[in-house]
Image (cartoon, rainbow, N blue to C red; front, side):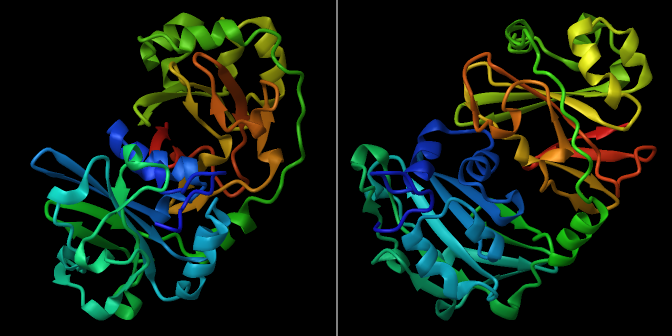
Length: 359
């Protein structure tokens, strides 16, 4: 494979897919979106087991946002002509010798409006020679990194990506519902940049990080530990790369002032209490990827994504620059609700494809 999806010095990007295949992540789609900088609605993953051989097929919908990810220049140039054609980049891979798996692009079926149908040969284009016949090539990083191939599937007018569609291979299924330009425009229009709030960084985040990295960190246990109303606390655990990302959200309502969070923290968050904001603590017990820019808010079928640093208040140093966490390291900040969100109505805080809901 001469093209790779995640550009890394000296390594082809498809190495990421092979590593995910080896790791057997419980949520490969989230992990892939997180590491490549792709919006999660653009990513689909099919995982198939063929007599003990695990095959991972990564699908990426090619709209303009896909090219804002960490795509390699070579692959960017190759895929650019497919924008606007409802096309997908398709990358099947295995972690060991591919000789025993008969991957067949023609076995990929399209589901729309409850109907399933095969795809024509004309819908496919090879990137890796032999892709259409199921041939896998060794990863340029060495055979220990797996085998794979790359191609493009052009769906054209067969789908309306905003209404949604699915692709299946055997019993595996990947659903797509692409966020429309109108939804993105609406989110931008209804959540203009807010006035920035700057607070001093926490003096001691190590202790809090150690507590949150503990095996038992449920909403009930965290609420009891800090004297918080359990209705304000949400815990989101996301498996990725064989590890765990734990996100703890605390909605900042008046009762938080009576909690046992400690004067140091309470003095910093006090200006945000009662504004609808939610504090977020992020920790990876064994280390792993995290970026606050993977957070977004949903309400009434609208996604509110974040474009401005003023949407956050940093509680730990360089919170907005975090891309990964060391074992037990804490990243903490406050997520301010976009102005288009009604804090009195139910809303969801999402990270990639996982979410929690208030109230």
